[in-house]
Length: 280
Image (cartoon, rainbow, N blue to C red):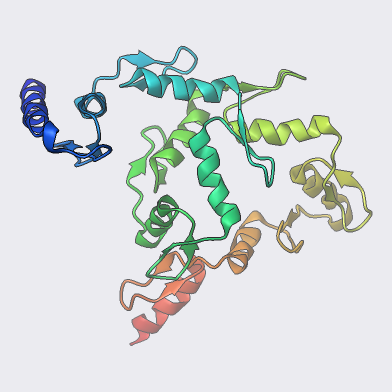
């Protein structure tokens, strides 16, 4: 179906729905999108939504070039560049750029986890969290980087990765000018200016603002590169050892056997298990 035919079809759909308007109750979502089925209470809202399916993105961000199909979407995106976070959580103080972000965050404090994984039983406060988790069980990584071939389970992971290739650093420190590709890296950097030193050496007690600097310092005592577990403080001489150890702290079992559906926490555990099938 061409874009012109889609517009005509959408217009007919709206007209037919308008004809039934006198019979509708207030607040009833009776305007539905023929492309995705999403429903709306007003015809104008449906029309605005249909821009998403048109593929036309007329509104672009002056700072990073990202384009949007709606002006409102661009406006919300620009909030992230501004750094303004007007909505804060009364329980923990975490701030958000949008009211919706705060509302989702507050589910964490409620303790309610209504969405559970059928494969491993892990529960989540939001449906989106469960959906993301299930991608790890599937092993499917549909988003790959055209520059280096690295693959990701989510579009967001690929997008974050591509920032490193672009060299674009939108987040800069007002105190020293150092720039970062991601907001979270800027937040970590700001701790160095705060004077807070949360990472200490178990051998001599010296404190550091960043765990990376603490780990470098530990070489003085061990003579080796040291990687420390944030969960229990256990030390390792290689990053690979630390990564394997971290599986012991998670309840997720994202590695599934294709032959018997049994799941495991780490790729090594899965590999050992598959040797049983190989012997049989």
